[in-house]
Image (cartoon, rainbow, N blue to C red):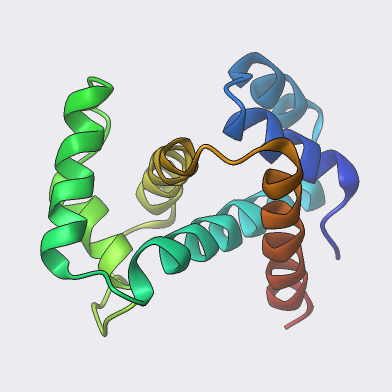
Length: 144
């Protein structure tokens, strides 16, 4: 199984604010496509979080990011701050996240990824390069 161009286009739609297209494409994916999209979403989350926090980030930076994201976008109901912080911390510390279920993890990855990418304000070419990098990682995970 590999990440297809349609799956990449779906995540790109999400990251550019076209949630209708993201939802529409999600409804057309079969089981394999949904697995590939989940892998790409996770890989993109880890790639974006690593870019943002791994070199100079601190736990305080994570708390600030999550608080700002929740406040700026009215996400107090959708984004549990402790869960979000733990998921981000797991990308550059030894934070354990095994107790966070796949549904909650996926929902939080999605919101956090969109927030991370919005903050970066990537031009189209850089967004495409970012998605290519995440696709390579997702394909590696899917091959294992």
